[in-house]
Image (tube, rainbow, N blue to C red; front, side, top):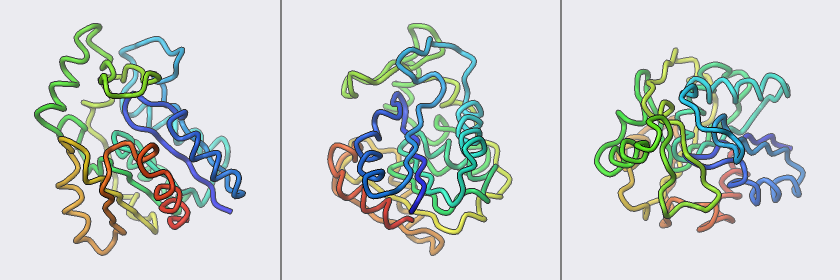
Length: 220
């Protein structure tokens, strides 16, 4: 049976994955939906959480639970996180699954990989306290403010993540103002990646849960 670690995107917690995780567990797999620091329902906003904080938190989970041969999945912002995790502990990861997510190179940040409406959200969305980005109105009522520093810090990579044997990318083609088209076009020409596109919006859990489950099962 497979072991899944599921990292959500900006403003979301492990609750976003829980219906999918429950189905994976019913099939005999281990599933760990992650709520990153600063994104829990009772977490107080703080300026002390950056991208390294989130990467460290997932690495700690893998090491403390001694998880190996992991299918590590990241949605949207979490592509930054799973990339950093894979670079630090590639020996624990069997597959990386990026779902409409950032695939950064050394020095990249979410901010450097986006523009336009996304910069407007990050900057104007953080005007209340200067360090947390308010959820967009279209998001779930359970969404929480997201630490701004995680979006502007550049990632530091050594290249060790290239040791992960399998990498998947899922592009969600009907996501309005998507920042991921260039990533999809780049990776679909790369033989090191398994790339697919679905004609849905960004919320794959709501729009295509069966497809998502099959993608994760195939990745194992």
